[in-house]
Image (cartoon, rainbow, N blue to C red; front, side, top):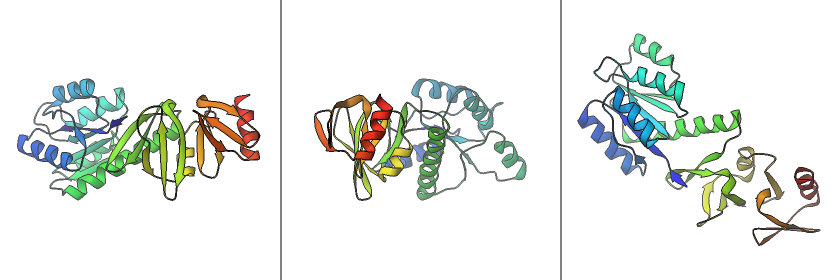
Length: 234
C-alpha cells in the first residue's frame, strides 16, 4: 500500500513552501518541490507522484503547460494547474493539455483539498473503467491508498463501509458500498458470493454446497453466486 504522493512545481519558493506545508497538514505525502521544467521532469521520473500541482508560469523558456504536455505524452497522472492568470489566452492554452482542475491563486486550504480529492477520484475512476488496472486507488480515512488488486483476498461490507482484507497487514476500511467496489474490480477475478462479501478467486481453498473457504476463512455462498463462480473458474 502507498499513500498518494503529490508533486509540486512552483517557481516562487515562499509559495512552494506554503503549498507543501498545507499538503502535509492535509495528510498528503509530498515529493521534493520543483521550480522549473527540468526539475519537474526529474521529480516525476524519480519520485513518481500520483498527482501534479503545476504552476503555469515558471519563469523560464518552458512553462507549466510544457511540463503538462510532456506528462500527457509519457505518464498517466492527474494534473492541477495553479495560476494567478485567468485571462482567456492562458485558459485556452491550458485546455489543450486537458488538466483535471484549474486552481486560481490565491486559494484556501479547503480549495486545495477539494481540488485534489475530486481530481484524483475522477481520474482514477475513469482510468479503471477504460482498461483493466493492476492497482486500485481507494480512500481510507484522510488518505488515498494505492493497492495492488491481486493482493485483495476478500472484501466485506458493513453498512456504508467496506473492509478490504489484503494478503498482509490489517484490513483497510473504506467508505464505499460493495456494489461500488465490485464495479472497480476485474469481473473474471472477483465474485460477490453473498450480500456482504466479494472474494478473489485466487485465494479459494474449497467450494462446498453452501459454503466457500477463502484463505482459510469460511463464508456462506448463495446458489446463484456459486453457479456464477463455477462458470468463471471452470
